[in-house]
Length: 202
Image (cartoon, rainbow, N blue to C red; front, side, top):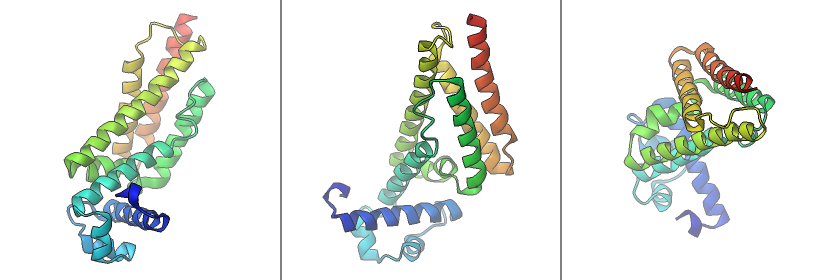
């Protein structure tokens, strides 16, 4: 459907997806109805089913894709160029500042706690997000290896997985408590461990 739409149609579909994402973040998947989404996005039932013929499940998958893309976009430009310790610190600052500012409205929380659990298609998007995110972190660690800042024998995939788990865990606690201390500590510890691995090899 998206590839067959006119520019106006794509804009309308995007507006519906963004509006639905906002409603789902605020109220949760279980309680949100198509009427809620139509009211927020100012669309009719005919319009909604034109863009999402399969109904709510198809819309939830589109929302999951939107939220997943937003999670990665929020970390740019640093996530794609983690080739120095300075870049890693800048990435760390962006992650913390972004999730502190978003609070309950963060796309990562919406994916893990709401949309990602709702349909198999949405869950597949969450899995793909984790894969892409971990690959970006792994690429950053390999960039440090290429620069001679980390030892070649370092287990890149394990380090990247641990950093990703640190972010996810820290954000989950932030969503539950409103406090970012655990997210800060997890990221600081993960980057410090990388630095120590580099120092030990030199």
